[in-house]
Amino acid sequence: MSHDASALPPVAHDAAAQRFTLAVDGERAVLDYQLRDGTMAITHTGVPEAIGGRGIAALLTRAALAHARASGLKVAPECSYAAAFMQRHGEYADLLG
Image 1: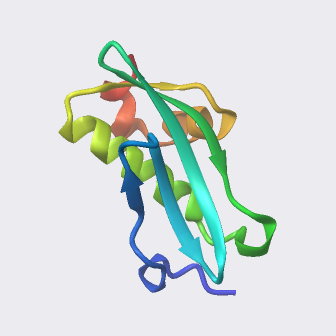
Image 2: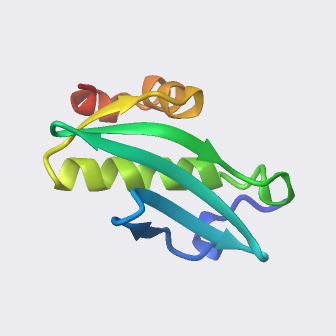
């Protein structure tokens, strides 16, 4: 099984819906967030089982964190995946609100 992220489409950001999405093989993975007083609270990361195991949740999380950094937002990882991701990747520690 290939874990080549470059083979995946880019992550889309729907700012109005406060959601990042990645559509693969007809399935849609999502990361939902809420903006609260300068903080991006990541509330949910969901990847359908059919497209699991490809690093898609990580791609969504990286896209969200990059957006937060570029926008000067702090991040509150309220979903267990985002919290674990930020613990594993110390380069995002500065974003923790």
